[in-house]
Image (cartoon, rainbow, N blue to C red):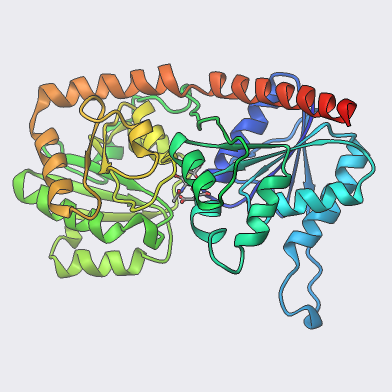
Length: 381
Ligand code: GMT
């Protein structure tokens, strides 16, 4: 198949999923074209059937704001016609589903559009009154709409009063890259002593991740057992979180690393992955942790219970209950037998339910289904 993929290229779950999908499809012989403003993060290499087409924004003072959606639509129409793409798969409904719609109006070459919802696109940004009508329109116009969890599919249908189908195609993880590796002991010693539990949090440190709850929960954990916390990622809440660690007099026990590209290394030496998101349609970082045999403790929200099997490979607490979050984590870390059972179950869950191979095959099947359905609708019309 000849497939176009559009995503936000920066570090973020939706871009990572889109990139891994594109790489996997290319490895299976499909001709894949990324169309984005920059080379997506994690798209390290291009090849004979893995291409990148840049979207250029023309800044002009009279326009006031860069017209990303329009520039993207123009570029999509060009690339689709030039490469004779059969499928255009956009990740993140807003504005990508609209740009895809516009590209179809411009381009004479027929193609099928697929929009994958990642969460904040329809649950947060797209629901704002300033964007709701256009987001709904984009969802209605897309030939196929998929969501990364059951929760997200149901919530989006409800929020936008849609009677169309939203198929669930869950995120997946590269179980070869994300597995517990043997790492030289000096790496772990950077963050914790041998007798201390090592807790890891990875996110883009946005308000929705409630990083201060992570710090407060860790404060409760370290009162019960020797432990250290590593916070990986960059974002607007970092300064507040650092200040809180200082106020709680635990700054010497918390390391902020900034962005780390090879997160599988820190996950390989971690005892626990701690998160406190108040909204999470899936939780890709949690899945990467599970794949590395690192149990997850977080709030029971959104799609997280679909990823983290409670009481088997992780523990979930009521949202905003920092006390319960800290207690669940500490109780697990205090129990060696339970912790090792959880570790084995974590890897098993990632491999059995969310392997990249199965995930890519699911999208392949979905594209084929869409091509057939759209072709038969065109015949009926
Ligand atoms: O919230 C983020 O970390 C970024 C965001 C994105 O779009 O890049 O993540 C969303 O998509 C990820 C991939 O499908 C999901 O794993 C995250 O749960 C989702 N974030 C939220 O729903 C807040």
